[in-house]
Length: 157
Image 1 (cartoon, rainbow, N blue to C red):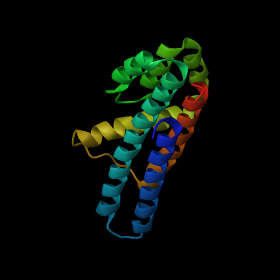
Image 2 (cartoon, rainbow, N blue to C red):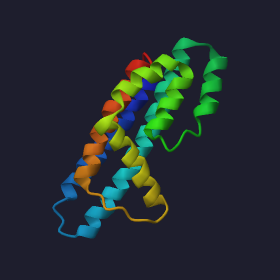
Image 3 (cartoon, rainbow, N blue to C red):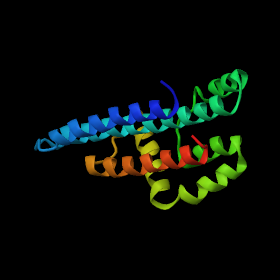
């Protein structure tokens, strides 16, 4: 499975996880709810990174031959810490106009959500527990989904 189909599969998987966690949110134990919010934060950041790579690879598959696809695959394999600046840089390397187009939509709440998800994930990974809630992560996730759709549209995927 590649490109948009893989992004849809990843999104479905994450949506299902959000539903399972939402069902547990009646638990009065605040630590458990906090643990799940951190877990979802890590999953959302992973989804963002994997979805972006799939979109870029789909563009390479449709726009060029196997050598271009291999080149893009190698150069996106380690794409991480997908804050807005890194996303704009990645897309701008393909086409500077795409970067300009994305800059127009990856701003305000979307930019804040994406940058916050990545910063929170890094804090979690380095042992600094962030104060984050399920509802905030869910809100960020909706902005991440919209941003991924914008990237796919700009890349013609």
